Image (cartoon, rainbow, N blue to C red; front, side, top):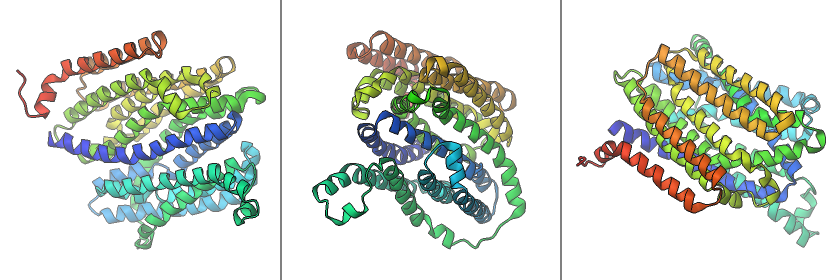
Length: 488
């Protein structure tokens, strides 16, 4: 049990590093939706969607390759040096080229050139800290990792509140003051990205000693091996970005121009209610990836992975049901402008889709361990094709609800395909009966709560208690073993 306790401890710390920043981000959603019209919030969401794509491209699979080779190679310093030098020069090249052609990028994307410039700087600064953050995870320094991650989002939050909420009031009350001379009217979107730039710059400065300590050695042979490992992950990452964000871009392209930005705005706002499942999945992934690689040589590794996956599904099923039962309470906290609530019907689908993605993350361990990351790329491409085709077919008639259906179809397909192929190449003895049972019951109870008894919390809480008893009944022996008691 010590193995699982160590995993739980690291996942909890990485979870803290994920949950607290996202909790800060919770405060930004009501801030944005209260101060920005739906169309303006839609524009911000579209810019962030493009940023996700470029984040993936600028990492080009080197983060996962770093973990693989850091645990595989005896000379770990050369892995760190080679990876950081590679990321540094590709990022600097991107920064120079993108700034040079930002006007062309603005014309191509339909986004203001000034916002394009801000976005380029954010992307570059974030790319430069990818490996320093990975190094903290690989060297078992989750507390330092957590502190820096939390600090980044805290600075972003404080500056966003200052720029969007308090600065206009200060200028209004003191029109002759210094701040009035630098304040820009109707620049809310610009201030959002300015806050992000400052936060990213401070994060880079904190981690910049990693670059000062570099000997700038570059092992070309190792780099080629890492690129061969990482490039399929890049393809998978682009496909993942399509699944995660391209729906917002397609909504803007396929819907009539007079409603497109507003539809993206309401969809993006309600999409945020799936954040609890995203938090769980992200925190788990941060803790589990180093864990999987570090225990790959254990003879009982398949049994360990099977057990971990089962408990991921148990906790995830409870989160799924809990968030759906209380979704209408969460919307009061996060989205106070009721005009956004029209998109609430997508919430159950988005939460379930993110749960499927989390299960896929567990199931996909096999192709990383046997160095067949190209298979992961193929699976992600299938998911991306499903996303693109269904969005293209459904958006004109169903708008963002079609996008939600496409998302759940893509992640569900990836989950099933990964299980099928994994069973062929790297068999893991998953307890399908229990995993399927927890998943089925949580989905059934969620549907009953949201579509049959929505906002009836007597029924919803009753379903939650029933599900908890269902878990206890099935896992009683294990739970008692963990607390060092013998079942009667």
